[in-house]
Image 1 (cartoon, rainbow, N blue to C red):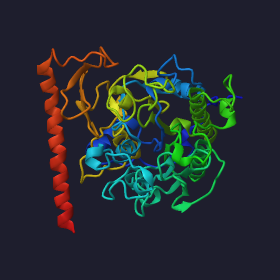
Image 2 (cartoon, rainbow, N blue to C red; image 1 turned 180 degrees about the vertical axis):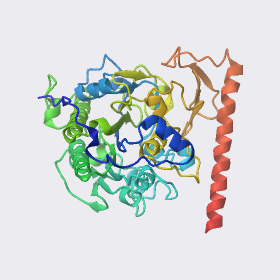
Image 3 (cartoon, one colour; image 1 turned 60 degrees about the vertical axis):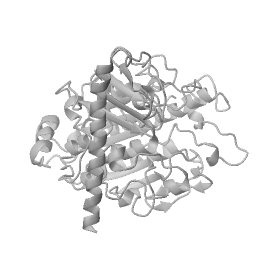
Length: 482
């Protein structure tokens, strides 16, 4: 069987938390909460954030009908919620994109703008300890959410940097960014942890391991009538790399045998594109089992689900993956690196089988989760994310952002309205694209529109200066407090 789940009859989501009052918050958070959640007698929603690793916009059939990857559960999720066709990740690389999600701050502001690599990088401090991440304020919300992370961490695993030391009640996952999916080895070292303890689950496929842990946590907290927030960052389909496979073993995309069943090829196939397809199907099957568990527990209607890819596909040039219709790949600021697939589901609040074309990005989830949890945002720092809930629930079609600022290594970009400026090196002239008319970024309009380039460059330059000034003030403040 393919493993697609079929929604059961709706069971009331008021099984737990019915009598919990909706706690009013001062200012904008409270207002947005009342607008988005609705009746003050509603129980606090559960929150499930799922990320996948390096999946391209064109890899998934809801976004690209030509895709041959079999994902019935993601297709169903899209039909039950909203397809976000204009969603961006704040960085085109794994580490920085995760840090931006968890802090609501762009990489230049949270000071984790590069990829953590090697044992030194992944087991170092990573994200500065001064940063406040999602579970820290969600736990302190009036509703007392239980919080957990299952999957790929990749933002630092030194003492003080580990998930359970930064607000998560439970963690099961890898410290690094791309351990082997079956042995959980990274650079010759076992890399799987439960909370802060190294464990050995050799032979268990990471996608299933993380999904199963999430289901167990959700089942336990739901039985205790405790609202929960689960962060489920799958480490697939990112392949492990040569440094992580046993000596003499071929480096290939790995999936469990049952993920090959829907295809006309089996686990022995060597074609990397076909093996990649099976890896994505394995993720789809795990998500299907997770959605089915929410149905069984009667909490689907009261669970906010958000799914997206941390950055664009890395291998469109080899015809293994697809960022169609966009140009470029991961670790670039072409649309293929930062314009990613995203889905949102919240029955009764987010319209089923809808398409949202309003521009949003990953730091917005930080603010959105605060809204959903009735948690007050940190007041001592600048948050780059804006509340996406009014857009997701159909209260407005207008983006909360006037522009989006991007910087990664030597790449720089800014999107404002229909236009985008982009350059791959600071010394290069800006390129200019009209994304509404040319989403594949094939027609550079800079030469014939110099005034528009200057107009676009100004907010980029001012944002860069603002961030530099902000960080300087923050450093002075920390020095004063020592």
